[in-house]
Image (tube, rainbow, N blue to C red; front, side, top):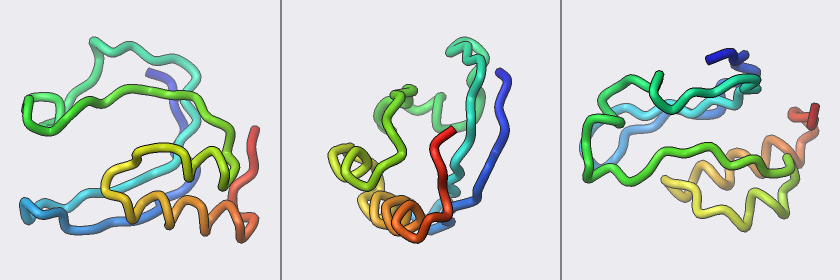
Length: 86
């Protein structure tokens, strides 16, 4: 997987008393078989997949991001001009 983390967005405790971190990254190459981490070992955590979307507040608002608060953090960051589409 070739990627570059461009911005740390947020860190928060979830309902399972686990710390979750959210980052914005540019991904140039992705292989689903290379994914690791505890979130990929648990069937009760939902799905993790890539979806390419424009970096606009409107596009982000349409996504079902979890936890919902990350949508606000990301949209506010875009609105402040701290993110630019590449």
